Length: 254
Image: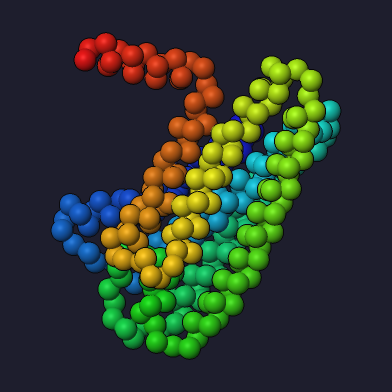
């Protein structure tokens, strides 16, 4: 689990570093410019880290499934080599997905201007600048990606159904609580990721507005990755004690 958490932290850090530094630079220097190559690079790396995060969360779900449902086979099914292979497959899947989408998006001619209603380069906003019918290729590629992502989602749901069934059969309440506590951080991170990303890309056009699009994009591209390490860190008893001391100290001062 700690090996996968390291990979997840790297993907979260990558998401933030892809968008935030450029946005801060533009804000400090009062500019909105980005080069064509810079926009392509930003889109590629953002898609790469975001996709890798989702695949890593899927792999981490399998890790939780094996540890709770098949604990005696954990070292056999999830040895160091198997973990390295699964992490590599997650990063490779994110890389391939990002490469295909970036190459296809930037192969389209942009004839509707060069201004994006966003603080970073994102596929839907770039496609709005194209008047070419070739964006049907992007829709086809997006459909394939959605099918693959739905496959991962079905696997996650099936795994957690098996996990909850196994946990509920544990006779000891203390052991049930311990088993649930190992799954809650992963469930919280996964729910935050899926809810923010889904709303950002699937919200109805009738409620879309520049300010709402900006707020939602910040939520799933910056806030969610920044919160993930905190969510997992709250399992650490020393950290929880330090946070509680800080909070009670502030309350006492007031």
